[in-house]
Image 1 (cartoon, helix red, strand yellow):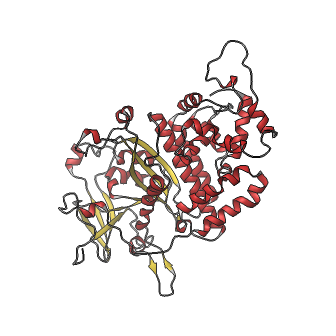
Image 2 (spheres, rainbow, N blue to C red):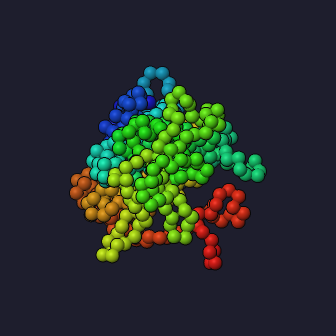
Image 3 (cartoon, helix red, strand yellow):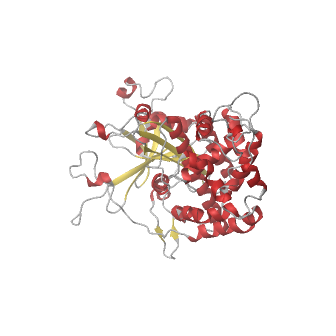
Length: 491
């Protein structure tokens, strides 16, 4: 990092005026703690790790801007305000420092105006940031969020978590194809587009990302899940898609005194040992010898069998299904609490969906992150380091927006999952320039409470029972998997 202290102070003042809705959440203390845990120095120049974190969020917020424009977009807005040239910050930004001694490189910021930094200097500084820093920064933010809002993600004695994976389409560049790979299911090689795999562990009720990892496309989701699930707490309850069905993964979760819920896969040989009630039974699963020979599980580190609880149910109009869990006691979580659907009772009160159906919240998270926030198709990097930097900015922006939605829900007594993420983003966008040009006292006392009130106004209507056909349901031959919805005369 550059060590120009004068320019560093100027850019620190600019940073404090940009994105003031997030400044109190993404504070320098949080960034410093993440840098220390990642084993790197923070720096005090104009492109220190604190400024780079702020620029990563700006890159996600302004997808149509180049990296060069991101460095000066806030400065342009501020310089258009009346009296800017006479303000202390305006005079300092236009001041030039003459380099002393030998001739310096053209990208050295010490020979330029204090308010300018070249894109090449930005690229060089960004390349010095290790990938582990973004993991620690997200974890530090999530821990700080949970310390302030610990009750929101608790259900009985459990902390609810969701785990799932998705893909991220990348720009078609040769080095990205070599680094991340492509999906090999297209007919023509010219149609191959680089894709990265992203797997995320998130808090279920607040929908705040907890940990995530971006890997090449060929890396299996279960391999990533083993790393993400290290360090679970006792009584954590992870809701997973059946693509994570793995004996080793189940045992890893159980060894940490945590629990899981997952949909039953077909052709799994489960031997019933005890019936607990209608559609509720205990079963033993022994992996086949073929699985041992392939090295999927190891005899040395894993037991020969595991006891699971199987909860069978059927939604009207759909095929029979089952949820499998290692919460064996029906008194801790009943069959209905696992599988019930959302609806209204006789008094008109809302009945929340069962535990496993809340897993769909992470599918909504990926949709909001990739489509609504624009990460899918909005990445412009040409190297792996740049792609990781941009994705980190998108995840941070999503976390901070969700944090504001939780605060808005608590301030106005609304469930944050009932608030519209798209409307929250729009309210942030509408108030951005007002926040930029307002003084700090007005921001804290007037604008931020007003922003939370506006976010709380946009509630999503409660519409239980909706169904949208998935792509797999449109296959005529049923080659890949059976249809989820039963066929009738209308379909």
